[in-house]
Length: 136
Image (cartoon, rainbow, N blue to C red; front, side, top):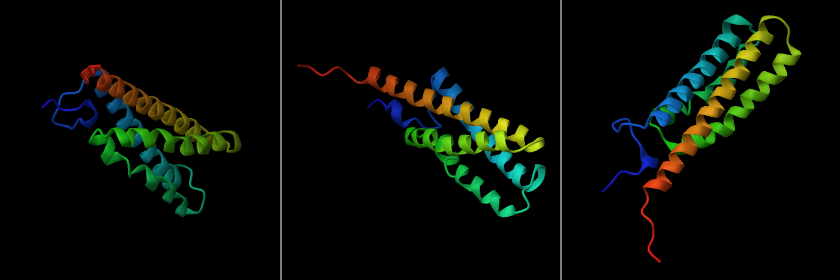
């Protein structure tokens, strides 16, 4: 029985585009996580450290991305827009260091979305190509 391209695990070798987009997604999600923690705790604290809780949902999909689960890539590509929106609002409303951090957040969100979208597209295309044609 041939393994499905939709259920890749860490033990199988991934095609180059899939491996590349997976690495980009993991790195950009890690960057968003670290940026959010550093931003609220050290770099530009707002005075209320409970805002760091907004970063916790970013830790949830990390396991799914590392296990290369297609479903995780799909919902992360939707969730990332919440952080993108926060970055845009803060980039235009904050000044100084906080505005610069907001632009970094925007870039990381766009990279994460692109990586997730490419991952889903390539893996679904690969799945369609590997399924045998049905006979009429």
